[in-house]
Image (cartoon, rainbow, N blue to C red; front, side, top):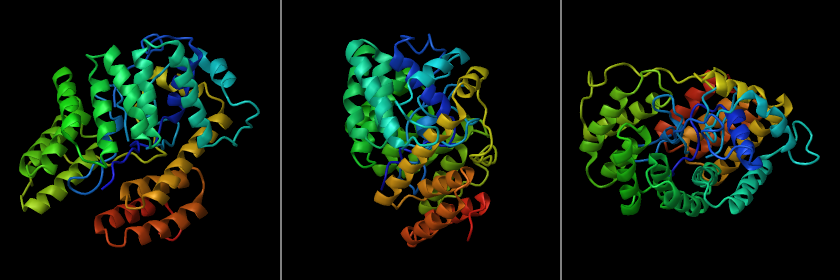
Length: 364
């Protein structure tokens, strides 16, 4: 069972990169000054941790959480959740790694950016949002264990921030291999008290129930979550699949329980709703740099899947991403690998085959 630190929607990388770089330069001291609105993915079998909730937004806020892949400029802001104004363009370019040519950057550059943020926080030890971002960044790049200390510092500085509590709790869940332990549950409960509507928190508290013999109650809470969110929210499909799986396991008929059919999640090539500031920030990035960073994040997902191949949602995202980037040959090879890895997982295999068909992967 894997916790998927993969962002849903596969989009908005550019804005996230912009946000991290602005904070690294010290030209804004808080997310508010940068025009930031906050927020914070799941998929998989019943009882597993779907990947969508780490980045969903409530009341037009984008959530954090889930591994590192965001593909498509005009998608929801999923990485570092931070729209700035368009004047940050020169700052963004000045922070590109020395000598890096357009189209040659890799995931290493993301690690470099995280390192710069860490250095900046050494000089600004009271920047709670910065520590929250650092913790989130480690979690996003597949290192939940490294996320714990920054989140603890953020909790000291921002004890009333629901996203800090839920981000810390999700990192704890990642370290525990997908199990919502007692400490994570306490943090999720604190987050819920601060923001009763936050979907990530609601999902994981229901997951705790599913993992502790209360699957029927978990099912009810997931149904309530699905019914309380917009029908076209990008996370609806994942939650409803979870509902279907648990209902089948419990032999419960949920026909008619969901208020509206799950909207088909937008493909990575389709723009998702973002605000004007977010789009301006994304547009400020040079195209070559933007594409290079996206490609680096996709390679990060590919590497993670080689290490942990039992992840249908991850493979589906990778195949979509490859096709958006015009990497059909690689997508075809990875489709073969995914089918082999998921041969004993009918649900995961179906997810991969569906994604391959919709994306036009050769051999699908």
